[in-house]
Image (cartoon, rainbow, N blue to C red; front, side):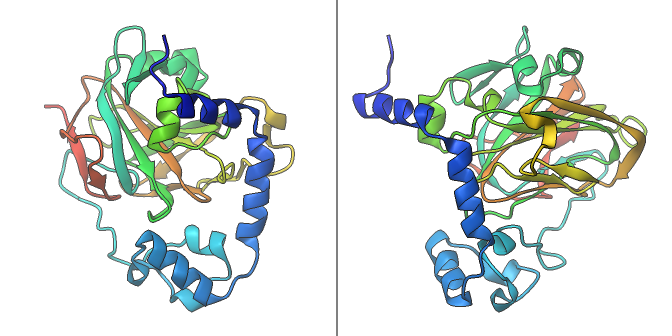
Length: 290
């Protein structure tokens, strides 16, 4: 029997019939329009955004999307350089962390889904069974660029089209397996030559109002672009693996969403982080197992 309240069941039904991609396109169109800097200041105040961290003065941003995808000033997110440390890929709040269970199941916020469903690649999913994972939610106040937890080489990416449900706590509770239903973009990093962290997957999960992910290391990736994947799965093995430093930029969210980082079994021990813990890109996430 469902444990959802009547209101939650109504909200779930409403979101299931809402044309979320059309809604996201409308939000995206508006976000790209020029708005006065007074609007951006009001927006920043409402969500508690620290504008002093931004690369540019707020008057220099053309619109909401330009501001959302802002770079930060040098030094705003120092990347921990301690040998053996694995770093957070994004700003946000921890949704859940732990170990991928036998059967490749992840339990996040009490909602279970499999790695196969999440990654869209059975062979890749097997690589992470029994490994550590962390899920981080990016709110509108957060920096929206995603970075590499480890140094290594980007060997492949995987794109899975899907829905664009919201990814806030209420939506995660309402919609079983939400993270494996929404549109996803996966970057695979092989760190064997640079550390003992092994394979790492950085999963960017889109949401309503996002539906637009770009990969910094591959200009062909723009998930909102007409015809990208034709709404079908796409997989690419990089002809020449792309070197990336710990903390190097992987991709960009347009508006807010969620990241999931995965490691091979026995390779990484994550620091304990209770759900709701605030994290910042570049701070220690854990360490390579001894």
